[in-house]
Every structure is written in structure tokens, then in C-alpha cells.
Picture 1 (cartoon, protein in one colour):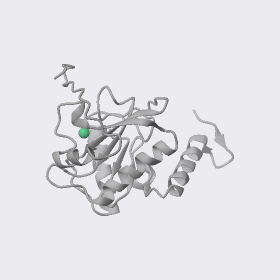
Picture 2 (tube, rainbow, N blue to C red):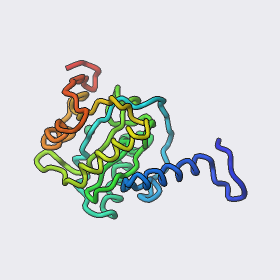
Picture 3 (cartoon, rainbow, N blue to C red):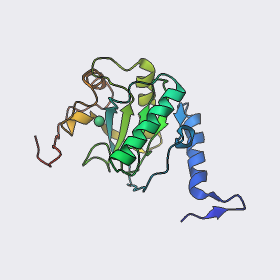
Length: 205
Ligand SMILES: [Zn+2]
């Protein structure tokens, strides 16, 4: 339960959320909060504390790349529906997603346990580059939006300054984040070639 403020019943959490959005706007981050893409509420929210040591890059594979705001909102909704209904998860699995419109879409957000990389969900930011980046490269606006989000997190001491950046395939047997994007992120700051792959049965490969 959160305390309400005045007759409007604005919860403290809502005020904090608005302040975060203002803060992100001032940081010149093109940011789309959950409300703006019409997210369903999470079934449950589990938080973790401390500066976040890992940034994990994904691609959605499907849905395909979105180019406009409405297309990207649709992609967010379809991912959330798939994760909540078909997978039975609490919410969209990722912390954030990046649209082909060059904007950052809020998923679970920072310091919320995700569902994108088992064993790392409570110590990472999971960023999904919407689209299939096996053969094609994400456009420059998507890359700069992802990097701006990471820089914002570090600047605000949400992400550890010595964070480690990896692709999903480095901790799970998967093609994600796609061959082309995987090659690209190897040039990003803080990329580590670490390998800690465990299959779905918990067997290290
Ligand atoms: Zn992935």
C-alpha cells in the first residue's frame, strides 16, 4: 500500500515516477513511459537493490523492427501480451526496449527483477533492440538511444560505473541478440567477451 496525497489520491510512487520521467526528459533521453504505450499493469514487481553490474543486450527477433511511434507501441504491447499471457511472466521480460523510431520504451525499468536472462535477472538491465538483427544492423538512432540510456544510468549511479556489457548469447544458448548486432556491441564501451552459458536444464555448456 502506498500513501495517498490529498483528494486527488496521487500515490507517492506515481509522483516518483513522474519525477523520473522529467529527469529522463531533462537528460535529453527520448523516453516513452509505460503509460504512453498503454502497458498493462505488472502482475507483480520484485525489486533488487544496488548499482547494477550488468547490461545485457537482446533483440526481439519478433516483433520485427518498428519505424514509427504507433508501430513501436504496438510492438511493446505484443511483447507484453506474449510474455504475460503465453509465458505466464509478471510483465514484459525486458527492462527497456529501443524502437526503430530512436526512442527508449520503458519495460520493467531499472532495479526491477526482469525475465530476460536467467541467473542475471536480478543484477542486470535487459535492453531489447526491437527487430531481428541477425543479418541487418539496427539503425544508428537505435544504437545511440541504447547508449544514451546506459550513460544516463551510469550518470545517475543506477548502473555501476564499472558495469559489464554482454549479449544474451553469452549467458544462454540462444542466437540473441542476432549475429550482426552481436558483432556491433563488441565495439561498445564496457563490452566483455565473458562466457557463462548455462542451458535451460542448468547444465553449463
Ligand atoms: Zn535475448
